[in-house]
Length: 218
Image (cartoon, rainbow, N blue to C red; front, side):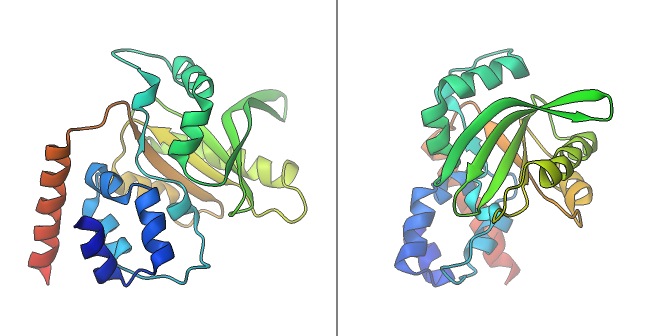
């Protein structure tokens, strides 16, 4: 019923409907900290050939397959993602290819490392993942901006689009994300991850509450 309603609201084509179902749009909307924005965006039909990083890189990412409980480090998170790489690629979405982990780059006299590096076939660009255990901070955006500028200058191949950065964190404030990432010359996305999926009852309740709020604004 959710997909039936949203397909009618958004005027989705069959292909767009299939993509939304394949990307678990229902679950991700219910889990999102800004459900209203996702429902509003989903209601806007787009030409089928349009591909954007915002749509291709899912949000939030559900990493329950890692089996992480209680306390764990960024190193442990990275190790488990690589160990469950096939499942992680399926969770990320279509057309991701794994390039490497802990890719080194040298700036002036210092060495830096990017946690995970992918290539997206449809976006035709490299996607840099920076893993964070806590909430997103503006310093995280600054660090990723450095990585993206370096990658654009040294890692891009002929025919590729500029790289995209993804900061994967356990929580974020929408206002801070907007102030830290708006108007940057590079595409930088902040995505939350969950180590457990809430019950179906909770998902349904959250979606219905947000939909009623949206309808009340009209």
